[in-house]
Image (cartoon, rainbow, N blue to C red; front, side, top):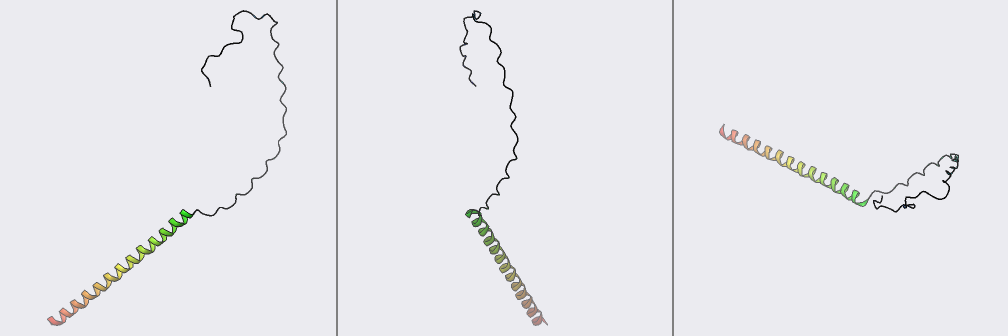
Length: 96
């Protein structure tokens, strides 16, 4: 939208010399027949992006690593407890 003032075609302010314009007849609207729209074609299945595959692979590897570290820590804790129990049993045997 322009805010520049545009000159009017009859800017003199005098009445028009010619006869008043006849209003133009608007042509009647022609209705077009509605045709059914064709069904959209199914979108082709695109393969997943490579970065999504890489992120998923890293997440799986991280989960495996956390599980292995946790299992190793649990095994170490159980073996240490077993050593303390056997040492305590040996001490009680000596005391008797």
